[in-house]
Structure formats: C-alpha cells, structure tokens
Image (cartoon, rainbow, N blue to C red; front, side, top):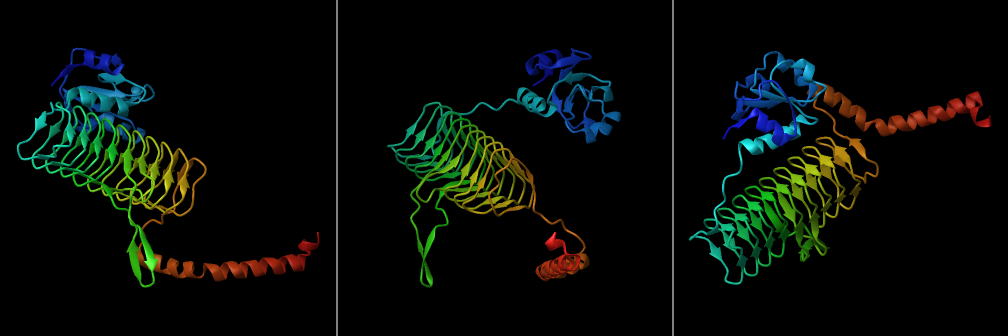
Length: 345
C-alpha cells in the first residue's frame, strides 16, 4: 500500500518540504532507504548518515533540518511520527470472526460474534470475549476471565481463571497471566503452599512480550495500569502494581508487592526487590538492582560494567577490604582531630 507525500504529511500533521507527489511505499533506515522509502532521524548521533541518505522522504525535526537537503516531513517528534506512518503504510490485517472448528468454547462462555477464537484454543466457563477480540491458536482462557475489546492474544497465551485484560491489549506467544505467585509458609524443614486467591487485572493498551509471566495476587490483585509496555522474559510477581505508561525491558524481575509508579522505565535485567516503592517518572538503567524504595524522580543505576578479569579480581579483593579501610580511615580522622585540636574548636 502506497501513499503520496502530500497525503502523508496531512495525515501526520507534518510540514512538507520538497516534492509532494512522491509515492511512499516502504520504510528503511536512512543510509539504506530508496526513492520510495520513508525514514527518520530522532537521535543527533545519526545525522552523519544523512550525508549518504537519499530516501523518498525523511521525518526530521526543525532543529535537524539544515543537515538534510531532500524531501522532508518536519515534525516535533520524528520517532512518534514514524510509528504513525508505519501504521498507515502497513495497516493490520482484517481479523477473522467466529470460532474455529477445532477450538473448545464452554457453553457457559460468552464470545462476541465479532471476536475470533482460533484453532485448538480453549475458552472455559463464564469467560467473556468482547467485540473484535482475537484469541489465537493454542491459547487458553480460563474460567471467569474477561478479554476486552480488540485485545489480541497472538498464540499459545494462557490467561488463567478470574483475570481481566482491558481493551486494545496485545499479548505475545508463551506469556502466562495469572499463574500462582511464589507464596509459601515455612513449617520446620518444609514449605507449605499458600493459596493465591487474588487476580491479575490489566488495563487498556497494554503490551506483554513473549514468555513473560505475571502472577496473580496472593490476596489482593496484581495490577497493571493503562499503557504499560512489558518486553519478553519478564517476571512480575504476586501483588505487584505497575503504574500507567511504564515501560519494562527484557529479563526484568519484579519481586512480590513492589509498587512501580507511572511513566517509569526499567532497563534490561533490572531486579526490583519486594515490598518497595518506585515513584513516578523514574528510569532505572539496565542490570541495576533496586534494593530500596526510590522516592524522587530521576535516573538511577547500580551496575558495574564488565572489565578484564585480572583487573576485576584485583578490584574484588579491594572490595572485600572496604570495611577495614573505612574503619582505619575513621581512626585516622579521629587522631588528626585530636592532634590538631579540631574537636575543641
């Protein structure tokens, strides 16, 4: 599907510079784009690529426009505009409707006629599949589950009993929503399982990546706010709360009852300890450990980067001695104060 540059500019609310009759049919990186491709530059470090770029049109900010002399769509946020343009060029395929012959839908379940239940999918009793929802091949929808309008379970997704997904969500293959939290009581030498009786309640416009798991609450619900984006291989434990429009990268682990605010960003492999709070507008850089609550917005990090093993071993020895060194320093400071009479002033 192609679109002429004049119409694309109108749809995006962009200022057009150049040939308005050019037809755009594809997307590409600036250095590889051809005469019918749309590209964008959002980070200034990529401006040098514009020396060789000859796309059909480039989404670019007013600040960076002097660095490019070709057809341009001038916008405040090129990355966001590129996302909207991609949706115009490659609209989602028309979804089927009905129930595949190999699917199982309990007679007590309610499936809107405009929804689709795909091959080998299972929908249990009292589940509700709302209008234009998509239950892909091999998905499991448990008892009393609600799947909101236009929400898409791509394939092999499990949504276990009583959980709720809002409208316009996307859940990718292998995700499990509503498994039991890791709840056990110690009884001498053995562990006794604590029944997990809460739910997972997910807002609207949430995306959940492949093989991510979100555990049901132990007593209260696990809550995922509107607009949250969760990458692949993320573990969200029982009773966690995640605020609106927070983004969580791959391999993050969030322990039970942690509360994460709105508009936060957690980089890859971040670990969040249980029963703490992260306020709104916090960014935690990749591989960091959040071991105590964060009460002020900002960017936080605790990781140690990789370095040659010989250097790391020497530094590891020094790290083990930090306590002793701190105590020696304290004694020296005390002696200096006594000698100089600083304490008496």
